[in-house]
Amino acid sequence: MLPMDQFKRFDVRELLSRGVEPFPEIRRKVDELKPDEGLIVIAPFLPSPLVEKLNSEGFSSKIERGKGADWIVYFWREVQ
Image 1 (cartoon, rainbow, N blue to C red):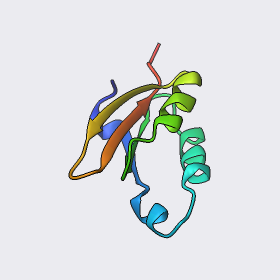
Image 2 (spheres, helix red, strand yellow):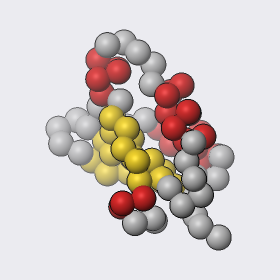
Image 3 (cartoon, rainbow, N blue to C red):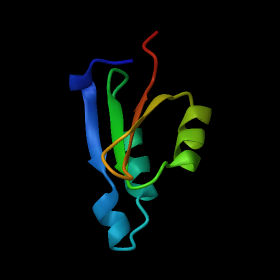
């Protein structure tokens, strides 16, 4: 896994509470990542489809329980 200071953070809880689908913004952020950067997604539920999608695109992931019902998911590409 990359060092923590190389991850960008994106909290999707507010978007979801407003009824906004966060995937387009997540997709944009993932597409803008440099090879040595990762993305942390904070969600009010385990975003299994997102994990599966990005894993199929070559991203590694780590999943942690956050506070309450929140989930924290780290995405990164292994540096070759």
